[in-house]
Image (cartoon, rainbow, N blue to C red):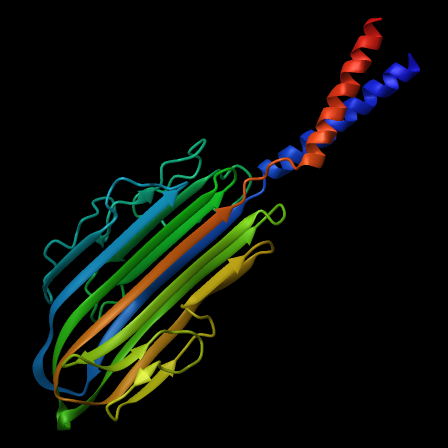
Length: 335
């Protein structure tokens, strides 16, 4: 009997160990987050002698999400346009005050329980805590889209995905604006300034061993164009320099140390870029009278792959051995 019990105990212990291994694999996650929030946006130009100022503007947002190749069937796109200071058609999200330009929130068809479902105009971060489940979603919005001299103007975009048992996920979001300007400066030479605050959060993490790859990103850029030619462009990255400043212009940057243009990737340990409340500003001086076009854009993305863990031959042999030992112990106990 001692021998029988010993064999039974060994088989039981082996089953427990194998079961624990399977639970560990099931709880392993591949996670990605891209988030950017631009607020307190002000666009000013001086010294002004005349001109019509802001003219035609357009705003657009878009979001997409996929999980295991299945996409949200609704459209995540929205756009509007008018002549400043009008806002015809720019209130398309009835759930938010102040008005928001935002397409339908994107939630990819769930795999398993739909535990983390994003609601309209929500930018909450679900994370990869136990119980978050498989999900992939995104949202983008332009809030109180007046753009000029309105600190309430806010642009948000988020993409977030998590894999527990699912094999792949992708999510993207974007928001942008384009505004025409007719400017006459005192003395014929002037300055245009863009300033705002921003929060950014980009994360990639793989837990539970080398089971997959996670990538996430955020971006924000500003461009000033005249007669089809770019005069100045800036993608805030913590370097305190503009990407391009031509035509004899001078570009002065006030930059946070946290880049709004970040990419994180991981096959294991967390990799992240995050910053709260950073201040960003660009002054473009030396502008001459004329017509201009100001473009602002921001975007986020996630891309995840999870390797499906299957038993290797050695593991299968161990499982078989455990079952045989268990069967022998049962037969001897009965005898």
